Amino acid sequence: MKTKLVLFSIGISLLFVPASLRAAIVPGNFWINPTFESLTAGVPDNWNLGGSDGTIDQVTTLNSVSPTHSLAVIDNSTTGYGEWYSDVSLTGVASPGDTIGFQWSEIYNIGTNNEMRVDVRFLDAFGNGGDNNFVVSGNSSGWVSTLANSTFDVRNQTLVVPAGAVTMRIQLTSGGPASGTGQYIIDDLSAYVVPEPSTIALLSVGGLVGLGGLLRRRQVAR
Image (cartoon, rainbow, N blue to C red; front, side, top):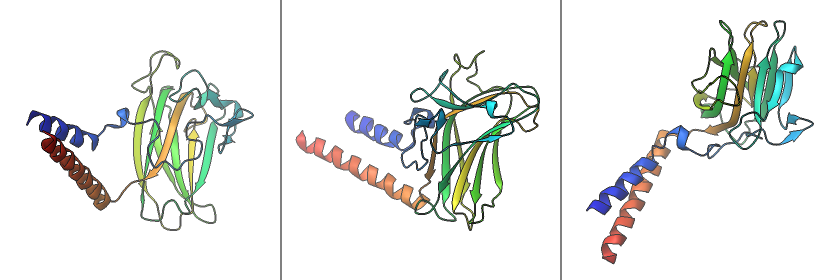
């Protein structure tokens, strides 16, 4: 009986693994170069430089999740801003009405009364689409004096694909106002289609059925 309870507890716990214990990249991720490890001339493949001050857009090896590079906007100026952006086609990946889950790891240390952000935009065939800003300010909970000494926090967000969307753009941007200073570093960016509740229920039932079969086999073996 004790063995049954232990196995049942393990089976249930696997259905609710917290984000911090999952693999760095979420299963089902469709983002291109999500770890920023593939670079050409110092720029991560599938990512582009933007903003009025290109020195703000950086790739750093001072701290990372996997394995050595992370994407950063490090803003020490008072006159400009920096921006990384990346596009992925939604064709064959997600349809209007689908829920997209996003997960990334982040460290930030941002000046007083300033902010930085990850922005997700769903673009139509003409390149138009609104902003979905995930703003950060102050210090992340893992910030400890320097980037190298700090630890990453895991961030999870969801958005629903709007009608007419054909492309999804993710941007990492340094300040709201051009005078904003500080640093925002992300790594291991995942985008994935969240299963419908009915699909999750079927997977859960399937897992419990499989667990029941295992318990029966163990019983017969005895």
